[in-house]
Each structure stands twice: as C-alpha cells, then as structure tokens.
Length: 77
Image (cartoon, rainbow, N blue to C red; front, side, top):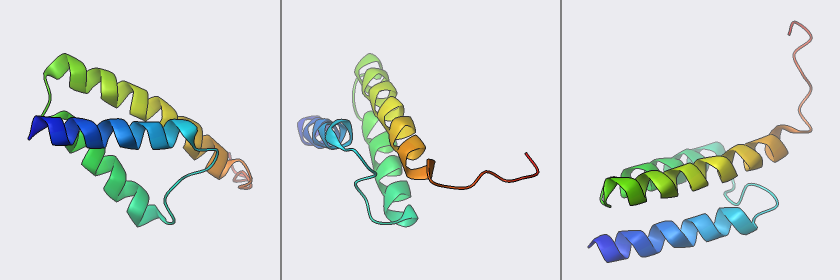
C-alpha cells in the first residue's frame, strides 16, 4: 500500500514542479489535492513524508503566488 501512495505523491509532486500555473481548476480541487498529499505522507516513514511534504508545500506556495499575482491588494493593507 505504501508503494502506491508513494507513487501517487511523487506523481503529484512532479505535476506541481512542472506547473507554471495552478494545475487544478478550482479552490475545492486544490484543497482536495492538498489534503490528499498531506494525509498520504502519513503513510510513509516520517522523514520521507516530511521531505515530500516540504517539497510539495514549497511548490504550492510558488503556485499560489502565481495564482494571486494578478489580484488587487486590499487598499486597507
């Protein structure tokens, strides 16, 4: 079972690393993929899971920045 989860996590990580924009169509899909990745890392040895999560989180931060780059800042900020 861990091999299947590991393969899925690596495939998702490769997807986000290669993406120039958020690869999922809407907020719900993004949240679903984020949660699936996070819970998938729990099935792996802790160090491996933590390393995969850190890499995924870094890529997601990059993609969120791209996604929000065209958003107007709140004038109250």
